[in-house]
Length: 426
Image (tube, rainbow, N blue to C red; front, side):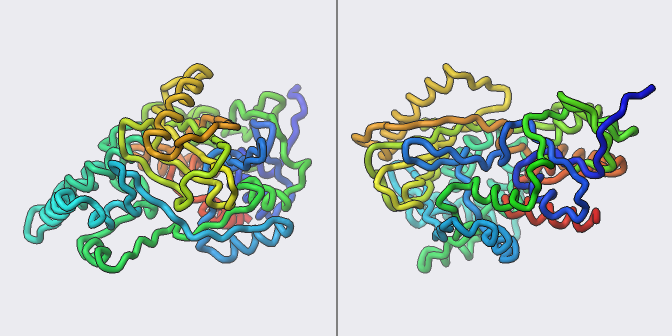
């Protein structure tokens, strides 16, 4: 005789923003959120240490949808919400270039400006056969020319993704890639317009976890199972097995990495379809102020280990420099305690080379490895995700979020997607 099982109508995998938003927007109260970690938040966790406030990485919220912003802010009445006009730059050969690079080549030395402008012109010359754009790298060359591509767009993004850009789909970054045509670039030489999707951002004084707490306030704590890992899904019988129990369900909503969900469901046929990078994040606190004119800076220089540095102190307007520093690795690279210690020393050296750290003393630090961090969106992964997502949906399994959707998106996108999915399933 089969043993009795627990049952729930909706089983939600993951207690990050996507999973919690699904629970918060659910019209059916019969749900359970499974979270393998011992606390909610996913990558939106916040660390408070020695008077510094850091996230697992820089999680700044770029709201375009007023309804979502109002929904969250109404549920965090005791938090001061900072509304910040973004200041972001590129560190290029000792110069500070406005971001995005392709719209600000007029800030380069004269010879480099001419090189970039000529390459851009001939890349877009009317009447010429179009250059191929079958992958991300080819798209950069075809639309921006060799100068802009090789001075910033390729080295920076290869440091970020930790792979050859020729392996990525040409639309790997979607709407988040700051496209610009020749007219935009020429116009920007006289009247700067560096607006982008994240020209403004908001940030709570208590860190990104406060947004998580806001949406979690709509979820009953007893319906979140922390420290419980999904092991397998029986799609035909609709039974989930965790490291603690078996759960009968009617439907599953998963924000877990898509390849991990496929493995749990017995559908992971070709692991090579799914690739990603991992990111080692250092949160660093120093004894005094550093540069005060930037919120984050991009570093295309391959001799520097990091690709981006963010300045929490310039958001909070505090008197001690507080940084997050991001270093990209291939997924297969093992980042252990020895590697982390080695890279901390190198990071401090490279921050000195970049002029961020001078005679500062490091007084507090924290590190975390995000794995996965950025998924690699390829022509193959796009096709396979669409096919397998439909197959899963036919068994009552729905996926969403950056990792469940195997895509590049914002946290606001995750909340909007969760709301739409729950309305669809109601």
